[in-house]
Length: 162
Image: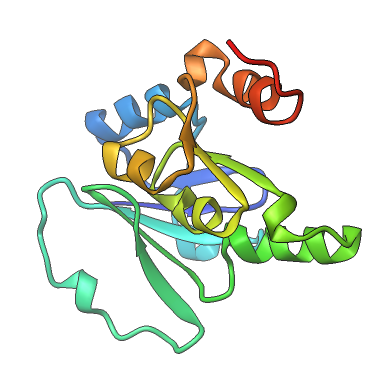
């Protein structure tokens, strides 16, 4: 089991397996090795568990009522504050700017983006997203490596048809 803590700007791990390193490289995540995640002085936004061996048991931990476990892929589980969602962040921005959700586009490429893809007036999945994420979106664009966000903006904001 590999554990990690996310702060506002950093990704900390106590140890890291070769598979975990591959995942970090694949997603462009820089990690910092630390002696003890519990001794971090920065505020932790999210705690993540990677369980490639599917050890089991820890998934049934009794959590505080203000925490939740979010499954983020086959091996990744994240523990975070109940109200810490992308949708809640977007709601705050929309409220401040007096914009309706129906007027918003949300673009994502993974399971942790589903809540905002469902919430937005136009939810778009990247071409590299898993099929079940794509199936929930209103539209699917090119992959991250193919400038999918650019193509979505051109299509849905500027109505430029390819």
